[in-house]
Length: 458
Image 1: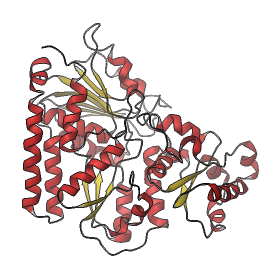
Image 2 (image 1 turned 180 degrees about the horizontal axis):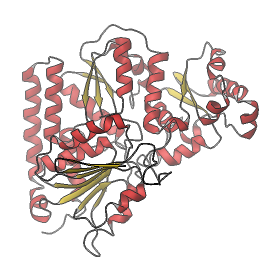
Image 3 (image 1 turned 45 degrees about the vertical axis):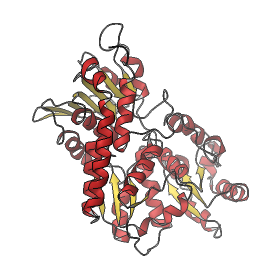
Image 4 (image 1 turned 120 degrees about the vertical axis):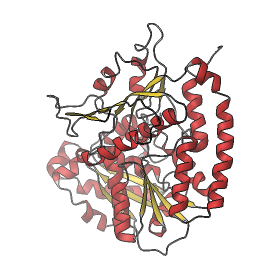
């Protein structure tokens, strides 16, 4: 563990391997394993059927541990209890699971409807050395993608990267460039609880300035959209670290440059900046981009005025705290500070990003803040430690996961507690279908969500 001062910002950086301050484990980390990330990504692509070559409980475990936690969502028609699995047990550890996989592929191809199958291998076949590629080659007439996503490879964020890398390496071919087409990367299905709404909101934003967004996930032509990845002019990577490996591979193989943003934009300031950067990079007509910005800013700020009394009379310029993944922490913090004038007290980053990305995350959290007060920033994947770090502080709002909901009642004034808004994984106390905080309207939704905790007669 390292502690450093960056100006007047206190940063506590805990090692990615979890072996800090004598700890050898993490309590209730806010992510699952690599298999979960690949599995969730496969389910996000309409027409792609996942086949789990894994232990008997892996699929069902992710239904409870990843999908329900991702906004109380089921896995869809081929997810959860409907996902075909080889169901490996003790005997397969000794004798191998290749025969079981053959039977799984054959049976699934006969009863499951889809454009393609994704064999997702978990810990057991990786440890015992099953030759999954050889088994897949026995089915030349069935489109199958091989994804080696053993849980011990990393978190669900790693599984997202493994999924995209497998897609790029195994099914994509060079295509003519399609003017105005951009790929959207960096939003991880289920792990980012607003992923469905975020992707569609980004798509609509880009359409407003004349671009076509290939969002891959949530689309009814999902598998066909995957094949269109090489045709894009640019990759838009909406994260400080998620999707970066896939973007690099797309650039190397298909000459697609990337534009990187720290997160999805929330509210007028972030969104207008987002549109201007894209407009300039893609040489879009300036009058079109500025016309959209002018109309949307005018409309949005007019609506924000209606919340003025609640924001400025009931809870003026309060301190707030965040416990969330890097993407969410960045956009929520910037919106609360720069648009509403609130003060960041403590920001805890729960996604355990690789060390090489942490400086850029800190930069994204601090360089654009229009405030003389700077937060304490902690990279903290341990849920118990994160809750303890919230005690004895001055904040009056908490933006976090559902795991922090119960402690919110113990914070702040006695018998009052601190208003808590679930904005990050896991979300067991909030159903998330299409809601999101992206764009001009997204900022309005965030205001509605957190002010509804204390709205009432003034």
